[in-house]
Every structure is written in C-alpha cells, then in structure tokens.
Amino acid sequence: MHRRALLGSAAAIGAMAVLAPAIAAARKPNIILICCDDLGYGDIGAYGNQVIPTPHLDQFAREGVKLTNYYAAGNVSVPSYAGMLTGRYAIHTGMNKTGPWGRPQGLPLSNPTIPKTLKAAGYVSAHVGKWGLGETGQYWPPTVQGYDYFYGIPHSHDTWPLPLCEARADGRVSEVKVSLSRDVTPNVSQLQELFYQHGEAFIEQNAGKPFYVNFSFSAPHLPSWPAAEFVGKSQASDYGDTIVQLDSLVGRLMAKLQQLNLDGNTLVVFTSDNGPWYWGSAGPLRDRKTQPGYDGAYKVPFLARLPGIVPAGKQVDAIMDGVDLYPTFASLAGVPVPKGADIDGLDMTPVLTGRGKSPRDQLLLFQEEDLVGVRTQRWKYLRNRGFSPVQPRASDYDYRELYDLNDDVSESYNVHTMYPDVEREMSARYEKAKARFDTMRSRPEVKPSLIRYVGDGRQWPDDKIGRMPRAPDDVR
Image 1 (cartoon, helix red, strand yellow):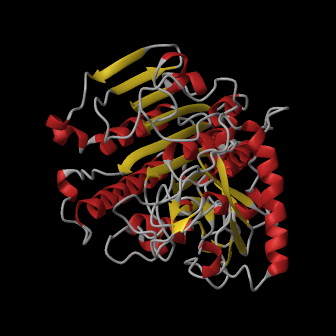
Image 2: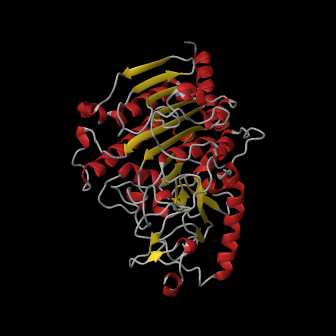
Image 3: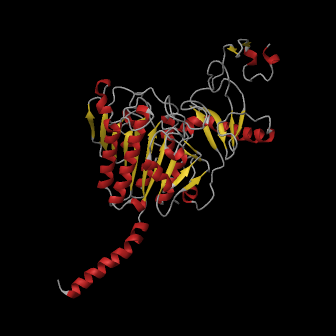
C-alpha cells in the first residue's frame, strides 16, 4: 500500500474512533428487562441476603441504581406481568389473577404494549421464558402482543403439561418438546439455561439495531430445580442454588454485552414479579406472595444499569410501580405513548437518571379486583383488611390500617389513631381511586353473609359485619 493511502486509512480509522462515541450516543438505547418469578426482596446480597452468594447482581447494584421502594404491579404473577407490559393496573385488562392455566382469557390485543410501542421507534423485540398472559386462541403465542420472537413456556413451571415453544412474528410456531412432565425433571432443571441461550442468540443476531428483550425467568418459583452444576452452591438448599444459577446468567449477559460492545448503550433492569412464595425471603417486610396489602407481597428488588445515564452506586428511595416500566422505556426510546392510551404508569426517567424529582406521589395495591391499599412516600393505608381466625376476603371488613413506613418498614403497628389527619387524607386518596376503578369491575364487590367468629370464639352477628369492633362490648 502506498504511504499516502496508508496515512489516509489511518486517518479514517482515527476519525471513526472519534465518531464512535457520538454514533453510539445517537443510537437509541437497547433495553433488557430481567424479571424473575417469586424472587423476594431479601433474596439477593444487594438487599441484605447473606446465605445466597450473588456476586454478579451485587456488582450490578454497584454499577447502577438500586431502588428500595419498587412495587410490582400485583401480588401474583399475572397482574404483575400485565401491568409491566401495558403500563396499566390489571383491572383494566381483566388479568387480575393467576390461573387456572389453559383458560380462554388473555391480555386483550387492543392494549398498547412495550414491544408494540417500541416497534414504532425501530426496535426489534423478544420475550424468552414464562409468559402467563394467554395461551389459547387469539392470545397465543406472545408474538401477537408485538414481539418479533418468543421462546418459552406458556405458564409457570409447576403446571403440567408444560410445552416449550418457539414462535416468530411471521406466524411460525413450533413446539420444541411435546411436553415436559414430572418424569423429565433434568430437562426442567435446564429451563433457565435454555431461556438465556435463546435470549442471548437474539441479542447477537440483532446487535446492529435497537432491541428490547424480556428475560422472564420461571425461577426461583417452586418447585426449585437448580441445574446440576449449581447444586450446593448456597446455604439455602435448592431454592438458594437456583438463585445462584440466575445470578450466573446475569453475569454471562453482562459479559456478552461487553463482548458485543453494547454495554455502554444498553439499559438493563433486574426485578421480580412479586414477593416470595412458601420459600424465600421478604427481608424485613411483612407477609409474602398472594397476601393483600402488605409489602412482602409487592415490594421486590429493582436494579437498573446504563453507564453514563444511570448513576453508579446510587440508592433511590422514591416509590415506583411496575406499571411505570412501560412509559419509562418509551421515554428512553424517544417514542410517545400512543394517544388515548389510558395508562396508570408514569415516566420515571428522572428517578433512574437522578436528574429530577419523581412524578409519582402515590401507588395503588390490588387484590384481584379489590383495591386494598394506597402507598405514598411515607405512609401506607390499607382498607378491607380484617383480622380473623379465618383469612377473609379483601372486601369482607372495613378495617383501616395506617403505617408509617419511615419508622416501621415491617408494618407492625397500626398508627391510625395517632395520626387522624393523615388517615383522613389517605382515606380520601383511597376513596377517589376506588370510585374510579370500581367502574371497571367484572363482578360485584362481595360482602359476607355468614356469621364470622372473633378470636376468643364469640360470634360476630351479621349486623356487625362491615366494621371491626373497637371494644369487647361491641360483640357481646
């Protein structure tokens, strides 16, 4: 090569090196959402766990933002997933409860979703892992909701048969295996690995364009089946070993992004769909998955990382709701939420980037179609939560609870009599929200018709139902 040509090539290479950061900055950020199934607030090291090693997630937290008050959009998986995907509380969409699997219902196709909205900004998208938002008819496969690619299972891995399917936006659907049954446990133990491999392959194939990938792991939901190489890697038996496996997959993902030179332009979010089930840790929080109102069912880990945009090593205590993911991702992609979309989520970019105040002053907590609580930055207000020898329906009683979460994170002491002004304000918030969402109910609010029993065995007459007694005389 002539010297002049050589110098010209060198200059061109130098110019590209200078322009590369600008080009990368101009490109829309890739977005990866990692959502585990039933991972509790206290299940990883970044949130205080000391018996399950999670070095990759701990590093993730050091390199990004850790939220301490992130609430899933539901206390079980289906309303939580529906809320994340649409930015709407599940009462809008009818996806209020989990199961029974195989039912003809699904997430209405008319709803705007993350992949549908990002597609308008040139994104390609994939969902790998558990679905849960419709597995029959028009609701299946997940590509009908805007995804270009799907690889995974229709529901939780504790339900059989468990088909493992692959689908593409062009309508091609294939069943990878006829069924994963109780007799093929080793295959089930490899599910998380398979989900990861197919998600990674999609990222590699689409590294040259903006992408959105949802890793929807079906673990550590029970039963826990860690892959053989992770057995015994924690001090928390199979459940903990499964979390070690998930941590390793996060580490592989971060390494892959670096290898592909995508690390600096990819937002990665790590969270869970709801609190822990029978195993797992909710940390200092009260109750766990399925329980209405209390934090252990809704508040879960939330880590976010995007170098140069999301500050490293920052803890954020602002409240955030799972329904906020949709508008936040749309904002980062530079695409508006469709006009007329009745969403409950708010753009939390100022919170994640540390460049502004949170737009959220409250979030709502549901038990299926029942509004059971309102959370502000300091206060938690619960209604229709009875204490009884029998777990009541959320609508059975009208008992009011107020918790000061600045001082009582475990929700141990009801302080409604200490702060009557706060209770009135929180009650007004509750009634306003209830008036709005009750119009969306698919069934009437259920009131009890049978005699209940107070803890000491005395009957509570029907005419007393609707309020909790304040003194023994009330039930004599």
